[in-house]
Structure formats: structure tokens, C-alpha cells
Length: 75
Image 1: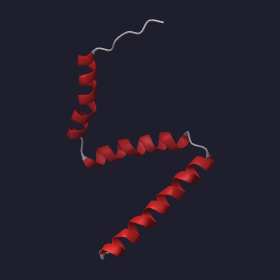
Image 2 (image 1 turned 120 degrees about the vertical axis):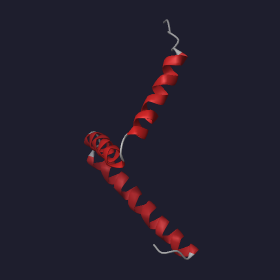
Image 3 (image 1 turned 135 degrees about the horizontal axis):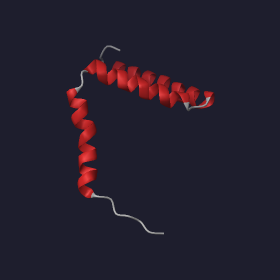
């Protein structure tokens, strides 16, 4: 099997492309793009996987609130 080496210059440009584009977009535009990505990802998950992700999110939110209370901040 023959492996072709990737062009380092092309890789560097590719890495810059997303960041450069993101700088030129508004917060609203970035949010819309993110929503499309999240929807595409969620459509590929099973119900059990979605449930697990939601459960972890709730646990993280509760842990964050508990940490803020320990520090004396408002939740």
C-alpha cells in the first residue's frame, strides 16, 4: 500500500481557513452555523445516545451550580 504525503502548505492554509472565516462572521451567523451542525449530529444519534448526552449535561449544570455556591457566588 502506497501512502501519499500530505502537502504541509495546503494543511496550513486549511487550518487558517476556518479561523479566518469565523473572524469575519457575526455572532448570529456563527450561532446559525452551529445550530445546523448540532442538528446534523443529533439526527445521527440514537435515542439512548441523546438521552445519555442530556443526562451528562444536567449533571454538569448541577455540579457547576454547586461549585458556584461553595465559592459564594450566585448560581
